[in-house]
Image (cartoon, rainbow, N blue to C red; front, side, top):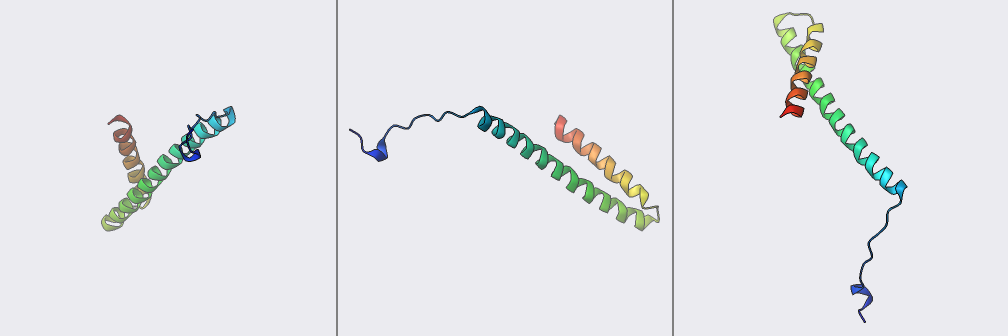
Length: 81
């Protein structure tokens, strides 16, 4: 006989609820991570664009255009590379 510390481990059976939560938990975590990255990139790009607009005396509304342009390029390169 084997001691209890060396006993054979049985594979665990997961219920449908556990698998369901695991799948959607991982999915939610991935979506949240990507959303945070996109938000941080947008904020940084808009801030840098605002500084450029202030330096050249352009309206600050154009900084939003810069933020959206950077997000578009970022998403294109991130998902197509």
